[in-house]
Amino acid sequence: MSWMDCPQAEAHREPDEPDVIERAIVPRSRDIGGFEVRRALPASGARSVGAFVFFDQMGPSSMAAGQGLDVRPHPHIGLATITYLFDGQILHRDSLGTIQAIEPGAVNWMTAGRGIAHSERSPDALRPSGPSLFGIQAWVALPKELEDSDPAFVHHDAGSLPQVNGDGAEVKLITGELFGKRSLVATATPLLYADAKLFAGAVIPFDAVHEERAIYLVEGAVEIGGRLHDAEQLLLLRPGDSVAIHATRDSRLMLIGGEPLSEPRYLWWNFVSSSKDRIRQAQADWRAGRFAPVVEETESIPLPDLPGP
Image (cartoon, rainbow, N blue to C red):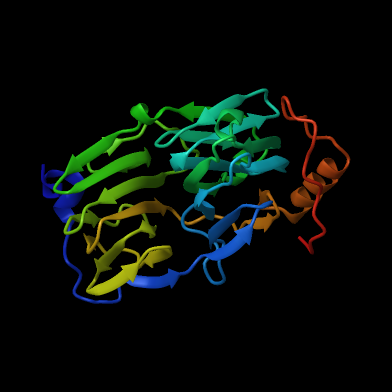
């Protein structure tokens, strides 16, 4: 099929101006307990894209035999986490009693609401040979009226996510609507999130479906508005412009979009809230052990000594 056959592509135009990219963000490296991630959001001058307030690339990494990812139990409030893998597996456990392995192409969607704790580890069966891991973890801020909602966890198998293929591109829709498809993954606010694989020479449109949009280049290189961009960058798009994404090499990228947050959000450690007082309460609750325990876990990450909020 041609991408121009898709309903969204009807309004596509090649922009006259070359500066359709407002800003290119190079992720910063961070250690999360012996495992390095590349953090694109939050960044100086770019705190969010729509409701996306946090965006980490995990890997690609091949761990030594006998080793694995071990993110001990830790708390969250006021957000939903989206874990999406390209390679490897993660075993999720949480304080609701959930035990769920995630594999490539599937989605683990955890709503923290008023408070949840969870751990993320490599499955025991993969440790002897040394597990691999490659993927994205993103956080989206909940609307103010839902920040203290009940916590929840939902898993979506890879086969349940809509996919559009054609003209050298494969696009899997994680949330929202794109190219005439709609994801069944429920979100608290309008949110676009898609995984696009493009072979060299492929071109796909990215129309102004939301006021705030970005492209995260996972692998490869693309040309947008006459300019070349290499992998591991978050490209913030100018509002209102329809753009064409040309893959100059085999590439993988995440399409991101949403409406601006109606109120500012404060981020402190793993807590997100429109209220500093609510974050201080979450700090006290974690320190005092008032979060429910994570199933099958006996340890936890202590509250860090960080300034603020």
